[in-house]
Length: 149
Image (spheres, helix red, strand yellow):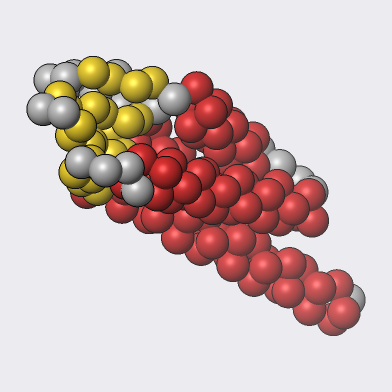
């Protein structure tokens, strides 16, 4: 097997999507006439920016695992495991954003706005799942070719 497999492309796309998401806000909310921005890094919006170190750490971890996963092509089982862990961490990040939105949105007088940038981690998860499925296909192909020998 070589590094030019389709799952490598899926993993690179997932890394790019997560890296872009790090620079944009996930939520904006207004409280008392002030606009607050919630994201991994400062997004340059007017108002008070809350940089979330947990979300930033999860985004970096997701990107590093996906990049590492590209170079694990010699050990397909380990590559599939790392990809599955990456999917779980990405889902956990989305759940954490949802919990944060719920906690902020339940306060009185808060106007919560979901940003369209939240589609980027969802697309990243989809590409990670496609990569995992491609790895499963490769594993099945290897198993079938071993059986024929």
